[in-house]
Length: 188
Ligand code: SAM
Image 1: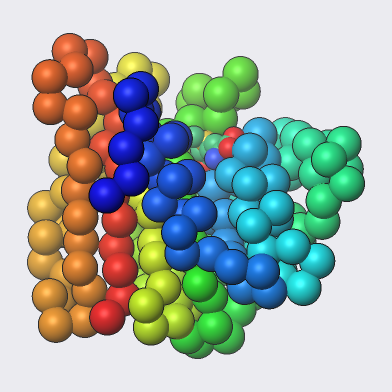
Image 2: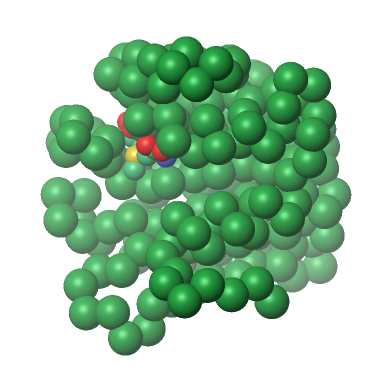
């Protein structure tokens, strides 16, 4: 197992993705936000790959495009809900899908992810993932976005068919204040 002295949700997710995504892969960032995960995925897939990034806020789309431009990277950044993910990729063609739930940092805290659309997006995304592909869902909750999504999502993820998927949830068990929960879903 890979190990770092100082781990957080971001390092755990990125270190895991680095072991899965290769040059030429197709990846989806389901919550583009400020574009950091989109840029990370673009660097891994290189010029031969393709990254689709989705967000419902123009602010996020603009930020993501600006970050990509500043780094000389390229992705298909779309202003759309991740619930419509199936419009943008073929079934079993995607190596990795990343979700960072919650609200846009330094943005409108009144707009955040909700269980119903997240569930729809995860279901679609699992169809799009290739076998052996990885979905990472980092659950950020508490504060302005509350607990509703986390409280519905965790029990629902437990119901995914264990013949088809492995669901691994990572808890920062002794952190005091609403630690994010990185969840990994591997398609068998
Ligand atoms: N990964 C991002 C980054 O690197 O900056 C941070 C993502 S932020 C925690 C969550 C984002 O999800 C917000 O930008 C928000 O607009 C977006 N979002 C909320 N509901 C969404 C939906 N239904 N479809 C796509 N994005 C959504």
